[in-house]
Length: 284
Figure (cartoon, rainbow, N blue to C red):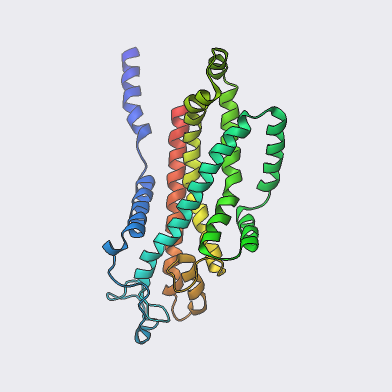
């Protein structure tokens, strides 16, 4: 009986570790989008800024896969090249927010109790406002522009990551093995590097993966409101804004950039959920 139980468990383990199809598809979509952002020439050789009024509002065809806009620009080329700006905003803003949050969250988690409590009260007030609203407030102070959109999204995302890092830091700091290491004379820096950061990386990676999609939505929303990149820059939110007035007679102008945004957000969310399930499975 014991031997059979071991065999059953050994056969069951690979099934539990099997990666779902949705995660593979999400990863494939993200790889394709990153490829479009880094090397758009591999997917299209058409200039996304080239205009041809004679080809204005042509529907999708073999010549123009996603049709053309009112200026005759190829929409497929613009969607492909737009990945660089849209994904750049999402990844750069999320990466900067995570880097700042790791430092701030660890410092708050290791700070004296009164300072920790004060910082958490401030964070709770900030977290009471939606991230997009905070980003819009920052944009109102800084003014429109791609760089200011990056700053605004980064600032609005920092509190979420800081709270998560701070919680993980407090949990590790109060654990028995860290208290034992401190009692043996291990310095605070060594404790942070050896014990705190490794325990923060897992959940932080999960949250950051989902956060990339949120940052892309925020960036596209600001571009839609003409607060980000300016025309004729190919950017998905800006393309949505340019195509909203022609939905009846040229639906493809807005639909394909919208599908690109949707596919990116769904892929990052599904991949983040999968990473979360794997992380929780390994820690349970």
